[in-house]
Amino acid sequence: MSRRRSPRQAADAIRAARDRAAPRTGLAAAQAAWTTTVGEQLAAVAAPVSERSGTLTIECVDTVWAQELDLMQTQLLDRLRGELGDLAPSALRFRVNGDRF
Image (tube, rainbow, N blue to C red; front, side, top):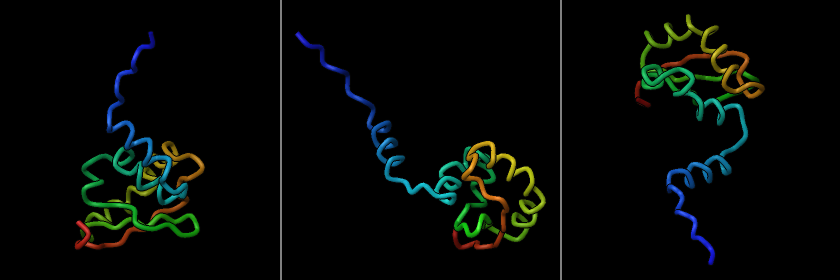
């Protein structure tokens, strides 16, 4: 008599499928790791939107946050390198887009 396996959690199956389908780019990796890497408070006011030649562009809710995060750039890059390894950006650029948030 064979034993039935218990059903898997739907969230686990969805997460696994999403991870398999996600593009393997620096931008996709940064977007996936952003909240974990910078924390929920910063993720609520800034988000990665594009990547070009190793520079990750972050859209911020306003100028104050763009300036604050620019001052924190070294720390943010260190965190991203620790989380993303080879897929981490080499520089960050900040711009304002209040409509996004």
